[in-house]
Length: 341
Image 1 (tube, rainbow, N blue to C red):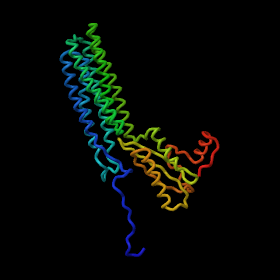
Image 2 (cartoon, rainbow, N blue to C red; image 1 turned 180 degrees about the horizontal axis):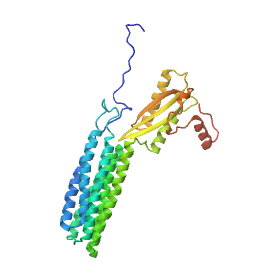
Image 3 (cartoon, rainbow, N blue to C red; image 1 turned 120 degrees about the horizontal axis):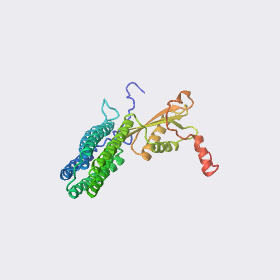
Image 4 (tube, one colour; image 1 turned 180 degrees about the vertical axis):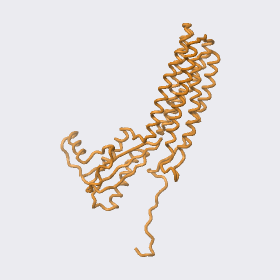
């Protein structure tokens, strides 16, 4: 190349299959906020009409739903922000903070409910206008149930822990309300007033368990938990399709960050290969993983298979079948067959 010639340049497309797509899911948070406002209003009316501490505890949990929905909105707005110079991998971990906040808020609501239940157990009061109060509570539960199903479906579709957590919380609220309705109805039928605070206390215990599960899930996400075994196996199976006598894979590691997924793997090839040969293989591998597995940020590290330094990289990784493994599997399932090239 002469001194006047410029070196060849490669044009890197913006976006493409390797790009992590940020999604603004805040519309679901607005739906959750609207549902919380409606259910709070209905449940407070039901409590005022009946005087039931069980219905009061149900209304208190809906207040927590509202606070949690606002936290969800903030988290989803932050998570949708694109990568920048200070956050090269984006902001999707904000979703885990939202789930943790929601879990802590649930704990607070549970303590308030349980305290109120104990006070009402010591000082029981009659319940009035049971029919009207329960009818209003049932309508509120239907609203929560419908929104919960929408959030759970969206959480699965977009792999959003925040939406899944909020959906689970609302669905727990539905079952909580069902328990309260049954409790209040039993009190009305039997006249045993202390059953009402007992039901409320049990509701509090159930809410504590829900809060604990949300905090545990959010903590796992902040600790860079790996993708599920099923997802890891799906990637390993795709990689196995490229394994030959000369090509092997190891050090497959994955992690999740909100609705984004990341994976890396080491590709072992003969040291005599040219850079172009190795690059072409890596391009094919990355394209196959994206085509067969979906949106994921995959990083491939090319290594010469003869170099001892290419092995024993990490203490934990997901295994990818070797050439011998594939041959042994083929012989086991279909008898001896032609050797894989």
